[in-house]
Image 1 (tube, rainbow, N blue to C red):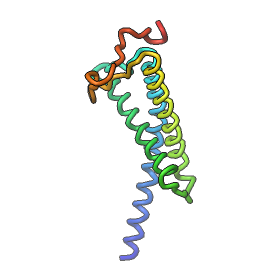
Image 2: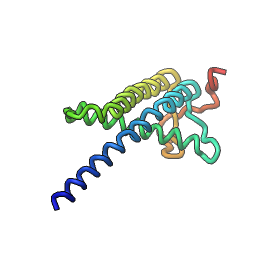
Image 3: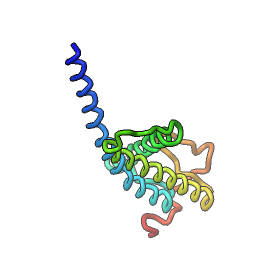
Length: 149
């Protein structure tokens, strides 16, 4: 019976270790997508277009959710509970993804603040949440376009 328990613990540890790289990879791949989206938001007032079958918008939305989730995990671990990690080797890629996400979230707040100050509007989050009845929403038609053209 004790032998089975140790095998179960080993399989649980292996499952946890194997899930860390996937989260790290998704987090690190999401960063450039969010950065380019932030560039579009800053220059045009809106993010990526929906694209064919809404796939480009889905990719953008999922990337934002991954970045926000990893930034929240970073804040939880390092600000709220100040977790001490004794096993640094296995969590280093996850730490990179969390820190990059926290920096990206700060950049996103800076882009939002600059839009409010410069243009007096915020980008709309359609189709998830339409708050145009409550706040002035940026209209992408009035913007200079991609790369200022």
